[in-house]
Length: 231
Length: 231
DNA sequence: CCAGCTTGTCACGAATCTGCAACACAGTAC
DNA sequence: GTACTGTGTTGCAGATTCGTGACAAGCTGG
Image 1 (spheres, rainbow over the protein chains, first blue to last red):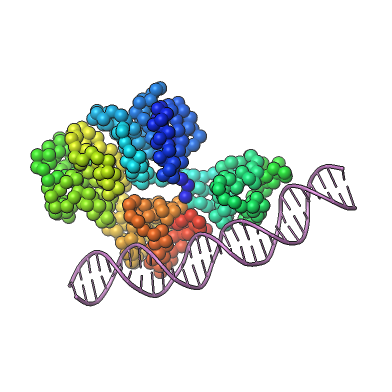
Image 2 (tube, chains in turn brown, purple, red, yellow):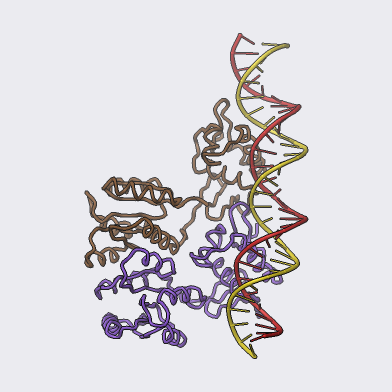
């Protein structure tokens, strides 16, 4: 199961880094932003599972960011936890009414933060939306881990699935065996590079009967590439 | 929309009445209890939409009441907010880990309490009217906690029912054993992951005689999935 | 207190996957 | 053509992962 990704939006670097450190230790993947602008940038290319927003931010108040997130259909379901130094009631209420799913008052301990993050994540609904990627009829569903062509299902083993998932989310680009090992197997395993070839072969074989093996292309001397362009 | 009903469990009468007054003014229907015993009595004949539990109660700690509520499948979904005078972190964490959906630290203002109640109610799943879910003849009734196929009833134990309920409300998606434990058992229990397998087996066995065991699918290396698509 | 049901663990075998090595084949440089 | 490098293919043994029956402990309602 993939690690949950948390986006931290906090302008004070020491605090941000401390939080990031704690979350990483707890097994989260962490993305950092120091203001709303960079937060939006981060949201544009990754899709975190939860956002931690500081109340006070240089360009726009965290509350406004939260409101904006909750207003946008794309991010409406994204859980938000607000960090606030102000303990005054008025703000607490505003935070919750702004749509934050929870808030934590500074100073807080890592344990408390973690407990709240887990509580919020636990109740957050898994994206009901589709997670489909398609290339000319070849459909990969990241939610159900299924690859289909029309009504039929492509039979893939776990590694083949992960491989195809990686390829379909990173098409049109050559990856060396080394890079593939890194991205698909995860950084710290020692596996022969040639093993990639074997799995490529297995993937191709599975796709063959549907005519999609041509998408998995060899770039001699470099590595492999996934592309719908048969060149 | 009918008025939401809130059960207040608090032994100190002045506080209890103040809260009750504030909630009634805000349009809630209020039920009061001064200890766990009377809380249980109240729960037996009404079904509130939310419970406010004081941390310190004469007969049993509020935390234990919360735990008990979250353990019982009847009341598992019932949102709980804890009231606590202790602001120490350890307790906060214990409160959340005990399964409370939120907590409020005394002293609090009616406005803050209201905001939190609304926040919790907002995210508590609105039972979408009809309580029947069906997949190709397999009918699950969330109201009566029964599963039927035509005129016949599928014999399920409590855990199997909860499991099937979760699956049928979250179909077409792979869940790791970890996630299933979290969502079906409730976050804070330590149970072996392989126990899932055993319950899957029991669930399949129960569905087998009706031919629906094929809906419970293994995704090797990842977890399990419920899907009406057999392919 | 007992009987019956439910639940969490374990152990074992079955099914499947994985990585490697070995060999076959293709492309390239000379 | 020959030598050499890079890739395709295959079989297999070891490692994982799952399915399954058995069992003890806990709980519930007599």
